[in-house]
Amino acid sequence: MSERAAPFYCPYCGDEDLRPNEGHGAWECAACNRAFQLKFLGLLARGVQRADNGGDRI
Image (cartoon, rainbow, N blue to C red; front, side, top):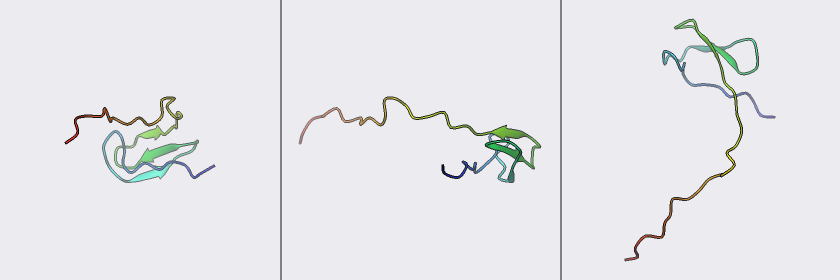
């Protein structure tokens, strides 16, 4: 398993002063005094699709 995901900024106030909190994927923001949790839901079943429809050739 890889390291836990680390956010770059708080989703509530946008500040970057984040610290790990107790619990899996939990973080706390020192600026707005909020705690939040990151969770990986999984991969999409459709995968990556190209938006290439052929188009006109020159």
